[in-house]
Length: 109
Length: 112
Image 1: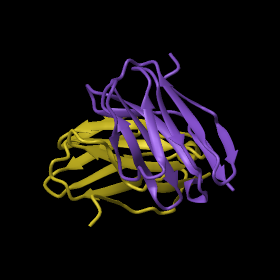
Image 2 (image 1 turned 90 degrees about the vertical axis):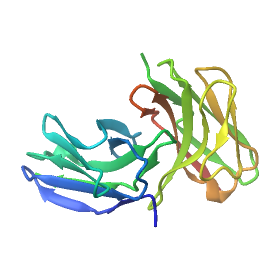
Image 3 (image 1 turned 60 degrees about the vertical axis):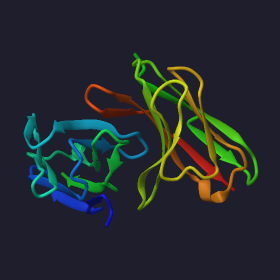
Image 4 (image 1 turned 180 degrees about the vertical axis):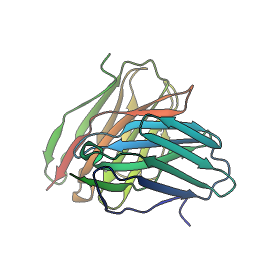
């Protein structure tokens, strides 16, 4: 079993839709959870960061962590064409970051 | 504040040639990382340096060497390039306080 599993998509949604992106993991030592956004031909950029369980909201983005289920989510409300990118989850427990393989999202105007 | 910078942006090599990818960060981070990204494989860690003077192997170190020149700079060397090393290479540095990494823009390497 891989440490972090993420559905690669692609996921295509109409503009204004609510998007749900998810990752599951197996290592219970993970404490820090991140979402990165990567536009085509660019480096990943940090989008959201959460420590341990709970929710964190930043504008149209909400990150959720459920450590009991080893499941993390990123919700995007009122999705825009500019949200079209690959989204990578990442997590660590004082080790080098472990990344999911990324989900490619397209938001269609 | 440039963040993480990488040179070159693009490179084409012939099999057997050598080259060094350069990375520098101006955020005073202790830890730095080299990744490669291939379609369907995600980001894979090649080497990392937890602090100046130390380096450690990651998931895919074979065929690569690294040098942590000082706190700012971390270079990746391919001694004898192979077509399997065709990839996009990313350097990153880590903010210890939040455990998050900041990435450079990448180097697209093609080995013929």
